[in-house]
Image 1 (tube, rainbow, N blue to C red):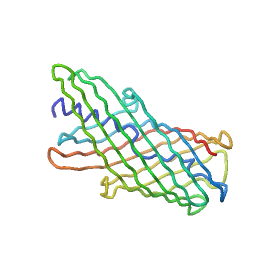
Image 2 (tube, rainbow, N blue to C red):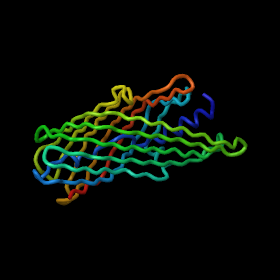
Image 3 (tube, rainbow, N blue to C red):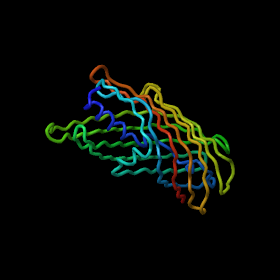
Image 4 (cartoon, rainbow, N blue to C red):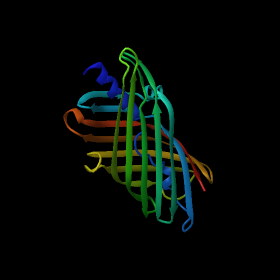
Amino acid sequence: MNRYASLRTGALAISILIASLPVVPAAFGQTSGDSWEFIVSPYVWGAAMDGTMVVEGREAEVDLSASDIFDHLDTGFMGLAAARKGNWGIGGDVVWVDLGADTDMPPAEVDPSLGILTLQGMRRISGFADVTFGARWNRLNGRIRFKAPIGIEVEMTRDWVDPVVGVVLRTPGEHRWHGTLIADIGGFGAGSDLTWQLFPSVGFDLSKHASIEAGYRILDTDYETGDDAEHFEYDMRLQGPVAGLAFRF
């Protein structure tokens, strides 16, 4: 692979820092029956990346630690909001990550960004289990501005939507300490060929209206489109610790 192709695929790979929806476990907690409960939760995911990317038919192997990714972070926002009444609920999640880095070989400014919007429905089937269903929209943009003597700018954008279904298991009842396991699977060839997630976590209630959540998340995605020079592939596993706060009202 030439140096230019390696730079471009590497920049796009770095931009997939916190892809997809990690519904913070507090959104699946108990409610007070027929009354509405609303939850707002900012969070962070210290994810490492391991996998393969192909851009315009050029392949690159990716192996980045969480510290490598955070070194290139310019701005980032992650948060969810959920509403629930009785056995039914709906949640929305927004992720925006903007990265910037300078490279020496060749001299260039790299500005990749990633946006994700997810909507998900929830249905309680018992005191300790929910089923979930929804769709996840992914938008990836990578821009590289080559400095003199090259003096050109290149940009690539990809969008795809994954249907996702899953299950949530949690400790029943209301306790200050609680545990949750989130598992889902999706894609099914409609967007990604396959995407799946495992997310065990524990939480602690700081008060009636706030809790702290922490866990470890694994997200695997295999997305592929196009042929030959238009071939784009993202076959990546993200995994690492997750931490967030949940505010209920």
